[in-house]
Image 1 (spheres, rainbow, N blue to C red):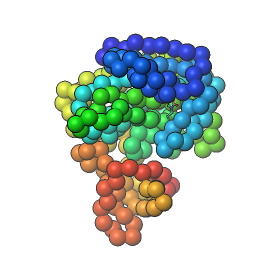
Image 2: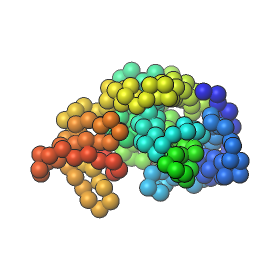
Image 3: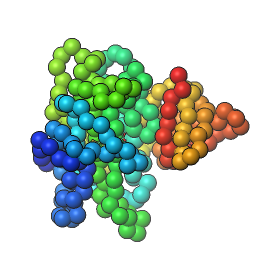
Length: 243
Ligand code: BTN
């Protein structure tokens, strides 16, 4: 994939910046990347704030996969695998796990977040996707989170992480376009926390507890519920690990 990289000292949000650019220039090419040294109004999934930390990575990039809505979930999982591979390149221990759909956890602590926005759907097709990635490289803004430098003696910075992520992402994205979701699903499962891990899933005001089983061939989460012992397939929700 050909990348066009634009770096800013400060933006309100790389995600809203890139969204505004796509609106102004509808043929903005795939691979357009925006990076900011700082964000003043970064946001995460479900409209939550994304906390700032000095030296962390804030980036958004544009994809034009030219396919149906199902691609959104698939690319979301693919992005998590690309980020887990990026972290593994530098961190050999402790273990790095993916938590559905695409949080990368080191020692069960969140070190990154991925946000996917899509253009409005026409005839079941998505015109573009904007992938927003925040990585705690140098600082963990929340008590329960961690950062990459904490696990390393050599210096690491946001630019190195982004360059590795671009490479990992390109490889997986090309494979996905050639071979579909199956190999990406296999890779996601190899990176996932173990089958049988106890989880709770918050879906709006409901909470389901159970054991992680797998992800299905659409990328949905499959758990065995505690109270019924039945399998449940979940397409949207927040997953918490019950250690
Ligand atoms: C999450 O809720 O876990 C996703 C967080 C995504 C944060 C990134 S930082 C770069 C990009 N710009 C934003 O405003 N959000 C995303």
